Each structure stands twice: as structure tokens, then as C-alpha cells.
Image (cartoon, rainbow, N blue to C red; front, side, top):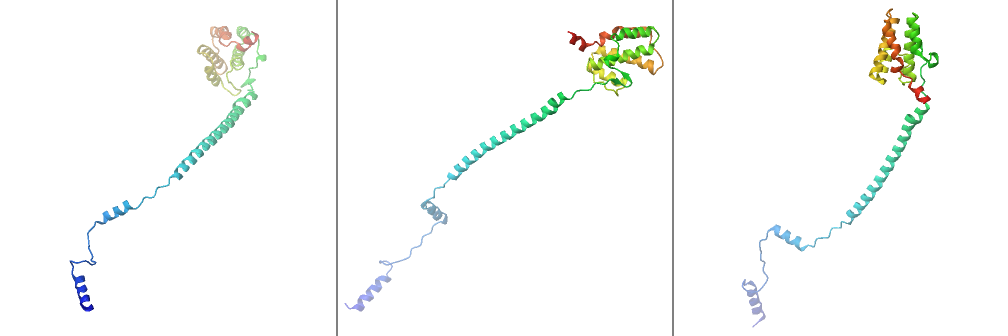
Length: 222
């Protein structure tokens, strides 16, 4: 067999599809399956979450420090506020002495300007016909007792009506009614040019010490 014959035989074998040789084969695959296979085959890198742990620790420590700082600031503000309150309402108030009036309008209400027995002296003046002087003494004595014995905050510029209102806030109902009746008798005499009857004035004299007692002097003596 010649070389030429061998070449022709080999060429015929290669052309025969049933015999060996290289050939291309095509198959169909879904793209999703390929991607899934690739994902399954590719190793997944392990996520590093250690930074989250570090962040949590830092936030916890920072929060604890912030709470301490806020607590110290609140305590400092409380101390400063307490000292200021004490200075204004305590220390300053204790050093500030309330000056009691010596006169209400033109009436002298100093205790030393009044007789020891106000009611008895007023009764004697009334019985001698000195009606205005008797009621003036009772009214002055009542104002003096209210200011110096009962701590009623009557001031020099207060009118009779003001004094009645201030007394009603500090006295009992009976004592307040007594003082109101005394003021009415005084106003009737001064501005109304009329005098109350003898029985009314005698009643005022009889009830004066009982309704407006000298509390401070009695307690001091005791």
C-alpha cells in the first residue's frame, strides 16, 4: 500500500461521523441554574463583625461617662440654687427687719403713746362728754394692738377700710366683727358728724381687751 492510499483512507475515516474524531455538542441550560451553581461553588467569605462589638463597648462606656457628667452638673446647679434661695429667703430675710409704723394716717399708734388701760380711759372720756377723744383713743388703741400684738400688716398709708380688710384676714370672726363695729362708730363720729349711743360705746369699751388682747406682753411676762 502506497502513502497516497493511506492518506486517502485516513481522510475518509475523519469524514465519517460515526467514527472517532472531534465534534461539537450543544446543550440547553437555564441561566439561573448556572448562576446558582456558581454561587454554590464559590466559597462565601466570612463577614467580620468585630467592629460592631467594639462600637457597642465604646457607646456603653461613653454613655456611662455622660450620665456621670450630667449628674455632677445637676448636683452643682442644685447646690448653687439652694445657696441662692437661702440668701434671698433666709439670710437676707433674717437680716431685714420689718419697720412697724408709728402712725396710721395722722393717728399715733405707738404703744408708749397710749394709756395702760385703754378701755377704762376711753370710758372716762366718753362719760365726761369728750366723745371724739374717746373713740379716737379706742381706734388708735385697736390699731396699735393689731400691729404690735397680732402682727396685722397695717401700714402708715392704710385707710380705715384697708385696716378692716387686713384685720379680717388675721383675726377670728368675732374679733374681726368687733373691730369693724369700732371703725364704723369712729367714722360716724369723724365724718358723719354724729355720735353713737352710749350703750354702743360702753359695749366697745367692755369688749376691747377681750377681743384685742395684748398677747405678746402677756406671753413675755409669763
